[in-house]
Length: 141
Image (cartoon, rainbow, N blue to C red; front, side, top):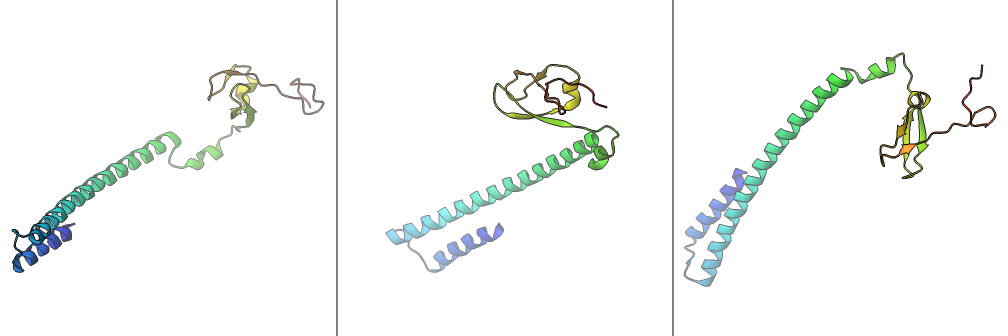
C-alpha cells in the first residue's frame, strides 16, 4: 500500500511545483482534496493491516480445527468405513415440529425414549412389520 502514499506525495509535490496558491478558492480546494486522499490512503492501509491479521487468525483457526479433526476422527476419515459395526439410520418425522430427523436404528431398538433434537419433545417411533404391516417388530427367519 506504500504506492498510495507515494502517489499522494507526488500530488502534493505537483501542487507545490505548480505554486498552487492556497489563498484562492481553487487552491484551497486542491489542498483539501490532496489531504483527503492522504486520509484515504491511511484508512486503506489500516484496513489492509487488519485484513492481514484476520487472514493469519483464520489460518490459525483452520490449523487448530484440522488438528482437532485428526484427534477426533483419526488421520484418515475413511477409518469409519472400516468399522465392523454398521450404522443404520431411519428417517422419522417429528409429530410436534414436523421436521425430519435421522435416528440410529439401534437407539430405536433399545427401547429408550427418543427426543427430537429440534423441538426437544419425545418422538414415539412405530415400525410397520415389513411382511404383514401389523405394526409389531417380530423376527423373521
